[in-house]
Image (cartoon, rainbow, N blue to C red; front, side):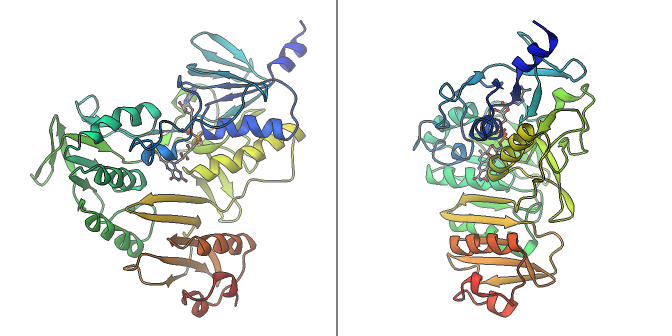
Length: 406
Ligand code: FAD
């Protein structure tokens, strides 16, 4: 077999069988790619969706969250339980325990790994929540309803605290910052959302640092001691790219593969998508690293189009979107509020439903909606179209956002 034929047969290889990897494989087929598609995934399980892990799967309301994709019918070769350990771009090969895997085009979709709390690794009763295995380990823990300490009041911490309260656990959430979601949302919004913890019967300790974790208890640096039948660490995640260290690929200080506007990396015919990749946003004038589901759905379509066309006009420049379900509320966010010069509230944050809009030079750049999905849907379209709004109309929750144009 000639080298050319062998390379052609290797087709597109995707590393990481999570949302971004699976969607890339599906998008290739949907867009008409007929060559070989191989999906390599480190986890042994049938590829699955992560958002239900901190919701229905955790509470035992759903057994699992496997994707409803007919891999065989789509002629997508799944190689599960296969960790990729290295990339040799010169040879166009990946390294795995069971030997090298050649590629013609390569898509990196290895997602992110949760940060661990120094000193807590290996301590009995300490958990992370990223994988199906993590959720399976936590399910019986919740069912036994112990006192639970959650470290970190971010998205995962809030969703876990919600599930733990629903399971009847006493819940204490320890947060080093002075409010919840300090890295994600402005203070006034975080403060409003922080009030939900007490309403749900969870204790929120802000400005509180963990000094050490021992089996059965958490010690804070101010001397307080918290009993803990289980400890869940939710302090953020980092792109799973350590295995690329010797590959010569460009990585950012945040560990992300720094892709361009078409999600191409610094290596020829190598793309990166989903939680492991950052990309330049012309819309927001900055590089974005997005750790949300919608990004792992939209990015793959651009990657597949670029692989098929060998260079398209369609750059990846989404309005980022995510949702969270916490303390009985449906929270949705679209856009990117950094750089906004005006914040407009729609409704009272003490009420069950309200929204916040961020404007820059009168144009809507981001919206957060709590129990107001229409605000989110209309706001997302207005952000996409760059429409200028009248702040007085925006401030009236009875006026549909789509009718608030300046
Ligand atoms: P991942 O889903 O992390 O998949 C990457 C896969 O690559 C993994 O299976 C991993 O094992 C594999 N892999 C890693 N390294 C290698 C290697 N070297 N070789 C082979 N395979 C490898 N987003 C929202 O918008 N709303 C939500 O409500 C929400 N809830 C969430 C709840 C939880 C518990 C978690 C963990 C995430 C949640 N997210 C949510 C975020 C969303 O799930 C992620 O953004 C999305 O899963 C990213 O997809 P991905 O394919 O890029 O990465």
